Image (cartoon, rainbow, N blue to C red; front, top):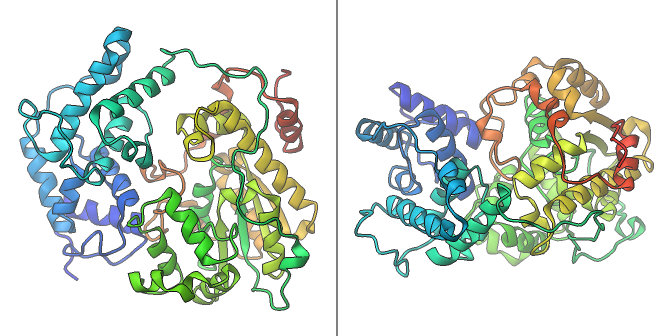
Length: 488
């Protein structure tokens, strides 16, 4: 391994260490050979552009310069040749554009961005993309939409529209809705439909109970956008705990079922499966993934292998999706000996606002669902299921944490949590963004942009105004969690 030399190389190395969870990285190491994938590449490029704002790094730059040294050199080249004119507020220009001209505005914007990603001349680019592999420009477009418009767009939404006209129409509508330029009908009172109907069989715990249970594990449960990635990274700073990115295993009986669900959300080349195998201590190969014996493996056995690799550390499985189903939560009681549960809660206003802003309804709701309805249901049903689980287990195995207290008083909160887990308090837990924490993988899409715990995030719910009052059921669950809501 050759050590990094200059300041940019050292910065790139530190980012790779944090993102990939690898301590020893040399200047000639390859990002993709170390486990980097499309998801991690997007986060890396976003952070690098934030640090080197005049270096317009693209997805292609990373593919053509995948080593620390090569990428650092490319940043220097781009920075030296950059046009350092003041930033043009594209979002403001779009909002000021007459409604009849917004589609054309976005179409021109897309042509320019795609030409830049493909390294083509803007004037000569006709917009013909029949020859283009959209996978090579998707990461760039995701960053451009987020950077220019603060609009999170997901990979599958772009790949569904492999033509500039269709993509422009989609982006125009999303921007108009986001900035109040298009009227969107919402229900005055949401009906809680089951948006995430699972195909898994409804299994009772008695049918799942096995004579040989796995060793104890810890499950970090929450609604989405509650801060679970932050808490996972804090726990990962403890030498007695093993805290990988979201496993999403408990929802399935076999690895074949898990594999099928993963590929519905992530591309086969995304590294999701490879990362799971690395968590088990394996050097993954495609042959291993395609092995029918591996796909037929019971998920409980997969957990056992992960625990064996992690020993003597306790496994902490953080996956917010578990709480959508009480059957899934009860499965942990069947597969593990006396598992413990950490219930992380956050004010519903903050969760709903963040859920809608990040467009999470595009993942868990049907086409055209009201995002606020979807977000409220996600908060209410998941917290209600976790509360139901807490009534099934002893108080020695259930512990509740409020996100607002976690970010404002991290020392006292983590001391209490360590006492619950029967481990010593470690100051390293207070530095969640340190190297080696496995920050990559599914979870908070913005987590890589932070460098320290921000106490102000615990107060932002006070300034949030939702478009309608929350339901009585949400108010009932909120009261159980010590959150008071104004009368609706």
